[in-house]
Length: 330
Length: 171
Image (cartoon, rainbow over all chains, first blue to last red; front, side, top):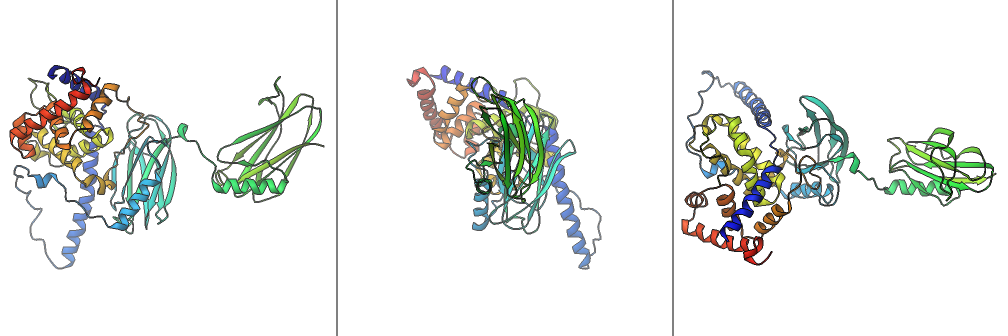
């Protein structure tokens, strides 16, 4: 038993060791420097208070404390901070906001209680395009800064709210080291609000249609008097093959916030009726979805051809506006 | 098996050397104990931060890495991890661990087998066979008699053998 078990444990150890990628001693130094910076600021504040109270500091800088004796367990165990039920509930909601981490794509995520001083660390992301989702539950606000090698990659402020405030930032990660993430809450958020964040690789983001875009798609379809409803969680293309040559009217309408760019193309069909995607562009126009009037494009088609409509949403319309269309022979 | 420094190698004289020599093995110990690589990374990095912050003192200890190891374990075992998580910006990699390869099947089996052990048994196995501590060192660390450590190790080995080796009949 002994040899076999030792072999198994030895191989497991070697395998685990091969997976470890140390963040690096430089990262340790950066973290400690930042913490000392915060402590130094606090020390200056305390000195100012003492002087204002009329207490003169007669001596120069204090002598360093005597060497710490052999450490005891109490040194290793940091004091366990108390966490009140309200903050605990916010923490739980912030954690829940990340979704099921076992199922949802995320490359790096965590949750915690907001600190008033900048804390920092390194996310471990392979190079690529990421979206950083930040959530904050409670009061106040939370500043976020993402950097690499001193270069700012993204920054923003998320308002905290009991029902959850959120922010999304695009992060372009070039190196296989980092990026560094710094978070800092304001006075109202410090120690009371809870945050969570996750980096998600853009390639893993599969948006699902929200309630608002579905409702607006319904409204757009009702405005046209048709049943076709299209949502805007991503840019979509619809098409229709027509059997007979003739003049056709393509009507499109969107509803909700923002603007959509409609691109209408005509194209041949494959033998099975599939409309080709490389057809001629008949029309390209951008419309405000607050304007409920349909856009009409007239298209002359030959036989065995079809029409495709692509709608590209701007940021305001994305996953909020909805649209509909009709293609009818005139 | 010497887990944390090859035999005959002089003890590290600088923080960087200590970090380079021991970060991996310390992380593996905690990784095998908790089964969560990112948790292990977090606490080991934090332990090295604490060592660096008082490096003048820690470097004078007879066993600096023992200090770091103990801090890492205690951090991992304390509730500090949860309530001080605002300071944890090393992040937890979950499903998409993009930067490194995933664990091999045997490693997964070992972590799963370790997870079935009682906590104390799991800890002494990791300290004995992955951290390479002696039984007296473990006894001192755990605050129990050496006989207790030997008993825990014996039971743990029987349980692991049953799950991981042909001799145990489970594989």
